[in-house]
Length: 502
Ligand code: AHR
Image (cartoon, rainbow, N blue to C red):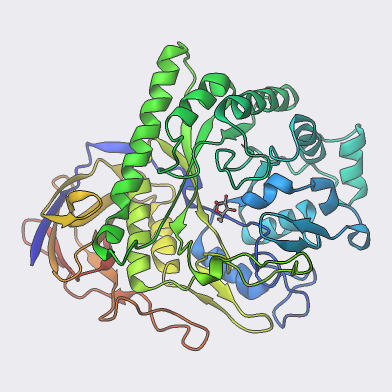
């Protein structure tokens, strides 16, 4: 049994939780769009062909801002293909995922879908094979009320009012050599700056995200951010971070401590933002948009692209990882890490939303169900949206990992919820030891405590088509309130818990 203690003091807060921390990501990749959110002919499809079973799950998940349409896809995307009468829209090769894009869902349809799920659009522009002019054209099409060629074209295509998209990503992972139109930091920085400045001339209050590194281990990490920010600092509001984790060489202990890496990544990018601000003598603030994060078994079979000059399937099964309990615990810890850094990370997107490394799975013509990762996301969003994060005053016993050395066995953060109650999120990263977890709340009059835990005797247990509800949240009956107001709860090995205190 290990021990950990969190002190939740009303007087020490990091700051408000931006709702955009609970964003997600829909890419034209595999079955995320086609037979994911959109499947005309499905028994649950609405009049526009959107699956209402998926809409209900997305609402339950609580995803706020949704990044679209990619990802690697956006670096070859010609946005004009995706608007206008559907019968005239061309089928195109998608070089990123070796697939055929039918363009049956585009900017208009996606924004209708967002309206149905109650989420906000975060649009990415193509700075791979396209450039400033295409980005400006798309912005004019989306945000100018009328009286110009492109705004009138939008109206003719059925959308009278502007889409009024506030958040825009200036390309995707331009540091990655796999990216169509990959550039060095100098060239990308210039292009991003030029595009950002032009976009602001049209719509000054946009929130713009410049590409940071596509992973913490990119060889150019650090110098990329510095160079790009030096060129674009005053014209952007966020720099992006992307991170995916999976167990390497079967090293589960390090995998369970992945939050340590994400935390370091955020802190390092934060330092570069601060030093650039100082060097440029700027009074403008730039934040982090952690707009791709998740567990992803990137080298495994589901992530292998189709091959062959005559084989460009439409919506193939790609990146359809099935998540275990252990994956969901790591995932819950990544959410804890984002919350702990809520002053710096003002937006984040879980990559992705449906079928593709996703919390929601679907079968064509069949059901939609929740993966294990669905639960930490929906509960964290439910309690933390509109809340305030407390400074994490945590003392935990440590455990040894091969990748990160000694790390806290228990990781935790607490949030003052919008209704005044307190939610504490905690993971026990140990593979075999239960943790005895105490929460001291010196300035709170607590009368009610409840806890739910995600755990299983089999840490590899999953929800599948055959058994869609194998894993779920269970009430943690060990949660108790001592006479002095301290909350205690047992955290099983490899578990994620939310404690709710009123
Ligand atoms: O989310 C899957 C892919 O991961 C995205 O398309 C890309 O941006 C990243 O490398």
